Image (cartoon, rainbow, N blue to C red; front, side):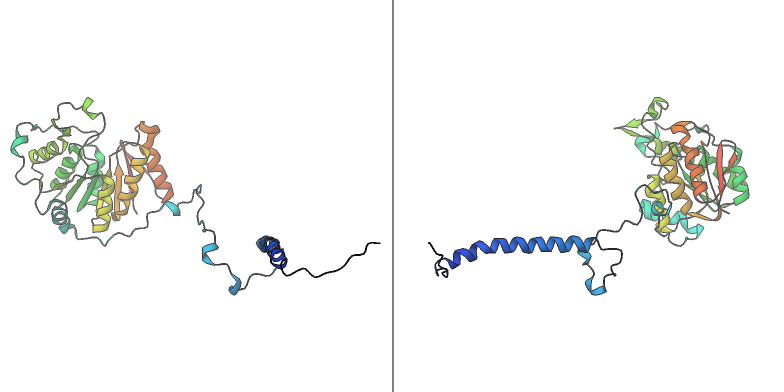
Length: 312
């Protein structure tokens, strides 16, 4: 009968066995780690909360989403930048001339020689709803020291407001916010306005209209986009008692202008605008006005073609 003989492995085999055992040990250790991690990630309902010392490191935490992306709450969309304190109305014009035009009024030495012969000198300035009763109604009620008009075009309504304030004995500055570029396709309707190297002379013609009506001391152009201008007015403390919104007729443009404009409205002031009944962009202006009023618990009033919102 053959019998087994128990022998100790020879010294030459020991390194081989140890070498083969290491992968198995690593595998078992990895399996235990995974199991413990899985169990700790799904604690039972009776498990105790982790102590502060056992809390996971900040780098392992998932980011906290405070507002879901499809929320209809207003807070995520509010502008939180604080405006500067209002500067005195009598300082508004000087502030703008210094900070926007290097201390020189755009009316100084106007018109330049290359433009003088091409500009129209007329008392009939093109506009839409620019002399409606709403202007006199609100100016008599508010008696504004500062008016901000967003969307000016050739200045018809600004000149009308300047004449009204002069007639009422008011010292009012009317700030006309417009990039004076028109809009894509507007040349189809206003081909007589000069153009040079692709630059439409809306700004020059606006300045000429203000000069013709002798209102250069009351009307001040701000020839930049409404978004950048209203944000800077907020930062500089340029506030208004009366604000007219009459620029883009689509919902997004009107919504942005109304919200930015309202931030620089003095307490007791009025914000209003044209095109409440215009059909453009599925009545975009009206939708923006109504939504703004609803969000801020305000009432929309109608005066002719204009919407009116009183701040108090």
